[in-house]
Image (cartoon, rainbow, N blue to C red; front, side):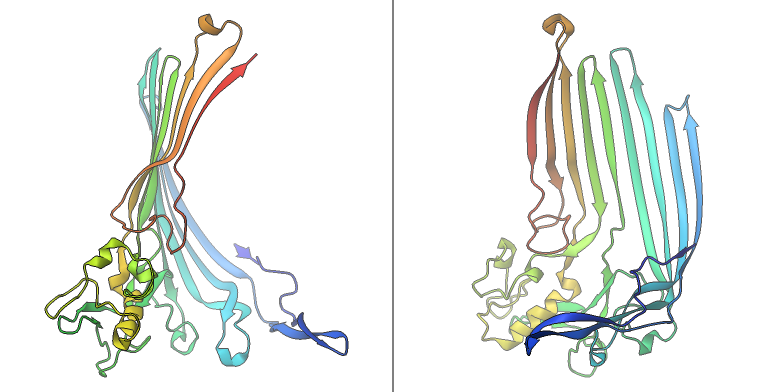
Amino acid sequence: VGSDNIGTNDYLDSWSPVGFIYDGIAGIAPSRLANNDYKWEESRKSEVALELGFLQDRILFNTNYYYNVTGNQLIDFALTPQVGFEAQRANFDALVQNSGWEFELNTVNVRKKDFTWNSSFNLTINKNKLKKFDGIENSSYKDQYVVGESLTIQKGYEFLRVNPDDGVAEFRDLDGDGDISEFTDYVILGQYMPKYYGGLQNSLRYKNLELDFLFQFVKQKNYNVPSLLGVAGTATNMPTMMLDHWQQPGDTGPGQVYTTGGNGEAVEAMYRYAASDGAITDASYIRLKNVSLRYGFPKRWTGNIQCRATLEGQNLLTITPYKGTDPEFTGYGFIPPLRIVTAGLQFNF
């Protein structure tokens, strides 16, 4: 299959007005480089699926595996700053693989006259990989991607320890030149797309009473809270975990020495820590996403009026080892999802 999911006339030069006025006339400046040579994006897709039903379809199992390889990706190709433009619309000279498994299981656990119980479980495992990129060493992507690795990898420093003598964080000198340098001392820290995710839903009914609830789960990693804030010791709010820090020779942290900014080595080490594997933690979670309880009043109570009471809740419970605001958001400054509880009565005349 092919795709040209790009804007119209993107192969032409573009100019945009600027805010500077000369002799009463607004000026214009170039905003896009021309490229007459880009082609269709191409994808080769394969998929196999299996559907099974047992016990008169009281147990339904579906699974599928997909394998897609895309070439000539139409993207805004990153350029070096000397060009004067951040990117140019072009074909990405690489092969990208996307593959994964999807599972779904639906069961009728109990089917009686007055009581029923149905369950539904789903699991998704997705992966991607840069299969081929000739000349990546000479491209603007050489420090971002690695052939054979996921497109969502993150590179950074390898954190070793907090120096027990001065309390400053230390990192591995990968090239052995005696200096910790950006990019040259970077290692692959991991990937930041979920390893797998899914959900479990149950629906129960007993006479006029109905209960539905959904658990959501995600296996992933995220940056810990200290790496998202300023240097410990400045007037920045810090989590309580930062109380366990270096204070005197012999201490090993895990937090490094406090500074108001005068300790240049500690400040520099903090920024390196924020770009290291020491700043990464398990952000997996299980969340009780939705709960719904409904009760329909018997007609002998209400006559010709249909009446139903409802009680619903969202984001009621989260189980996670993550110490930040919320494991679902991979950043700082986000408000966690609100816990919402609503109740109501519905009348039909």
